[in-house]
Image (cartoon, rainbow over all chains, first blue to last red; front, side, top):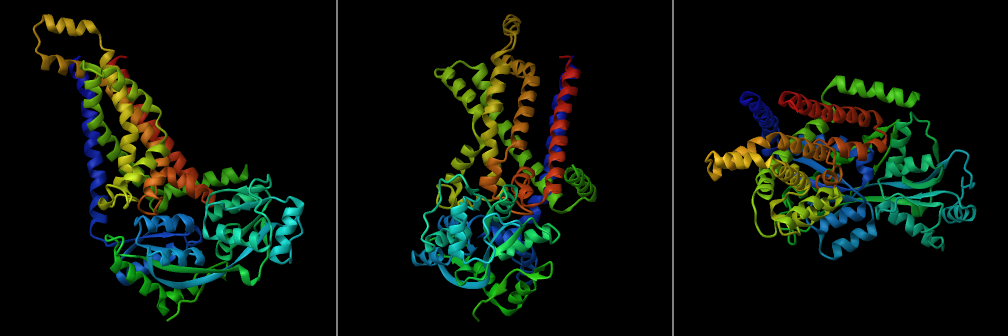
Length: 283
Length: 231
């Protein structure tokens, strides 16, 4: 009886030994490396751009880049709370306000692409070739399914401004207006399942195309308007208000990504032979 | 059907290949869940034992509180811990948000009520005659407590397994406190919740399989122990 009761203890001890061995290598590996923590939009993450840039950055500077992919709105909030040291986002108006309020400094342009409206191939609301305002009016008129990010991201902010520019009321509670509150690729998947239209940055759209071997169910219907410009910028969190922000590493990243070498890396980042982002840092 | 079958084949290939994103999420999960379960057992067993064994004013209230917290939603834990460990929060200087220790804190809080409540129940459920017998045999208070703990050991083990199941399957805490950072805080569940619908279906399936295997292994160990103990 006594011997049998010892067994659970033995197993617990074994587990503990296993556990410590499991923990040790992880602990030692992450101790020495300098880490830069970034909050970024889902498009830089979803497309794989950061997966491609981070090792190149680490090779050049020895700094390990870690990022949290959230909508631009949440990214700004994380910056305001000093939970990250750097932002890589795409909502110029909100960014300028962020810097003006003193939360961020040294905002630099990095790259751009453009937004497009995509929808089912059969295009039930006949948006193909329309201008943005008429396209949105057609969506409203036909009660066609429109899928919105609804997450205060850069893309969502842009979409809201487009409704406003078209003098349309936001179809907030309409049945055909679906607000996912999630990232770009997920939102595209929702649009695909519901055969709806959605606004997307071209980079993420190309990623979606490549995931579907170049033959996706949703295709580009509206594009080319000046108002669809999509600028990505980088902002250092103000070290004055967040004393712990790793300001030197932040400056290291800003210097690196705006320099011609990394700018060329961005231009070289392609899927299906298509360029996703066009670098435009001012030297 | 083709889609699912192909996903499954891809998933098995991913698991067979080893390394990469899939295994990174698996090891992260094992690492952080091990820290969490150890922490919650170290804190929870003594507290649960106290709650089930000792008599003190307010005991019944504490017991009800522990039982209520069994149903603590993961996102509530995530939110509360977030408020405390964000840089703007009281413990912000420790820099715990979006790190493994950050997740471990949340998971420990999540598992603690389970360990406390089940341990307390186990100790309460011990045969009262044991206590009387020991007393008549002249056992000291310390001996009495130790014997009770040993008798309740198996039930405590069940509590650990239950708590571990809760830890390993939760997604809210890992998402809110870990941030799903690739190669670092991306766990099995956050990868499944956040990556699968980005088109990484095979990886999601592979991770799902692993999660089931872990759950099965833990429960198999439990049932072997049960058999050995003759229950």
